[in-house]
Length: 372
Image 1 (tube, rainbow, N blue to C red):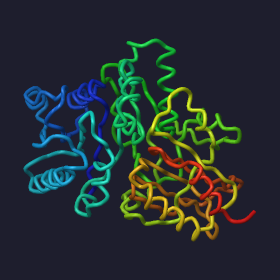
Image 2: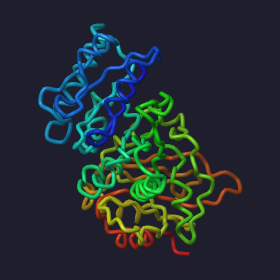
Image 3: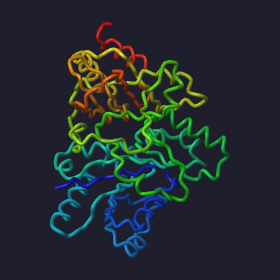
Image 4: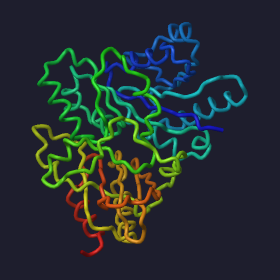
């Protein structure tokens, strides 16, 4: 049976999560969606409105935010939903999990890879983060949770852009890009987002594209990424990886991590955000054993601070691309397609994390390359 896609919706209080959700639920798209939402928060959805207007099944979690301390509750809720669906008591085709404004999406995402029963029923599609243009600068300055939500995103929606000046919006977009260069940004009005930009983005699929904003790459001296500007938030996906065993591979410490060597984070404008990203890039192949050992050690030590990371690698010993990605300590990899004739075999990796030791990572990765 096809896996049920799941979307995690996150963003600070007032960013417009509820507005977006209401739109998704009331738009005539013909899809049956189950919502798992938090019980409290200034912008709690009005259950009466939702249930009467849309006949959707709203699953309220009794004890608040869906995050690390009550991960088991999320698991239990997902299992209950799946059981009711199997018995024909509930009918839904996908789920959306709305986290509280202060939640770290990491443990929510990990739930989909750490529990076999959940992994056999649901497929984590993407993490969507809403950013309130009016209050974002203050929130990003004051709250590391807001920064983490940006770091985890597969797609960023910027709301309330009409309330700020063009230069302020530009500065915010630049800042977000430095925190997370792999998430496309879209300015939205009142939650009016086409569903194609909300669902089926395949942000967790292992695929041979590494989507990094080309402007971000061009800020480094030697960073021309070969046509990787995914024009759509949904990274093309490789049919071979329709399931998500990749992340599943509880640290399948495979030589599949790599970073886009772009030394462009040094001048972080005037914001010194805790969440930063950097890219490692090399035209020399990786030594599989060395890379496996190094990445295993790095994930072991810095896993909790590593939000999202992904790479498309040139490995000695295979003519195929090696693709890896991870969330916190969970890392997985797979063989991708063959390198195309004439295609430059360039390894690229992007790391997004909290106070990661860039120098140690860069030097360590450099030492895992095959001698020139």
